Amino acid sequence: MSSVVCLDVPVELLSSLTVAQLANIIETQGIEAPPSKLSSQARKKACLEILLCDVRVVHPPDRTAKCYLARLRLRWWLRSDSIHKEAALRRLKWVKYIVSLSQDIFRSLGVGVSRGACEACYQRALAHVMIKDDYNTCMERTVALYYPPKAHHIPNKDAVIQGHVHIGNNRLDIESNGWILELKALDKELGMANNWQIRNYLRHTEYTEGLLLNFNQQTGKVEYRTCFDI
Image (cartoon, rainbow, N blue to C red; front, side, top):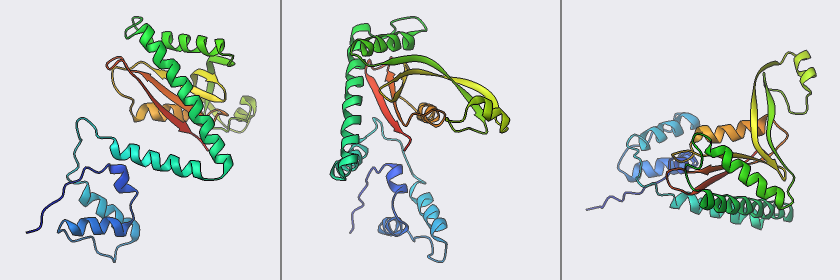
């Protein structure tokens, strides 16, 4: 009698597999895979629908696989040519510096430091320390948004002449060392909406590197994510 093996596999990991790999997983469960006469894209979609029909959320979330993949990706990057290696080490050093500063600030100020303005307090404290450490730092720069989106190097005057319409403004929390730093003080973990916010900031500016920081008011810990527009 064969035993059934249950594995908790991240959805994004399944999406990265080939059609043949997905079909093999389905067949090992005793289920007939979608017919090969379908197009590759349609067959992959059908495979994912079969595998994800019983998807469940693991509580607490198990990020072991995701961390493992990140380590593999980083290891490959460090083994590539020297330019990529230097860029990776430079980014890691900067992120470590900012996260370490943020954690020190969070320990000092704590949660609920100011009613309705926690994010601004952490922002000013972080910028203050960075300036003391001789990093040129700018706060609250306004970035104009246009539709259709314009390239950052096009002046606003030329954008209007070319038919772009000004639809609003964004404010960048902190700019320093070629990075955009976006700060949050949420009562929950960072979500996809926050990811898209920092990505859009990179799209509408000359920056290619962003760091999202969350001074989590529920856990008392600093959560961070990086974003690159390469």
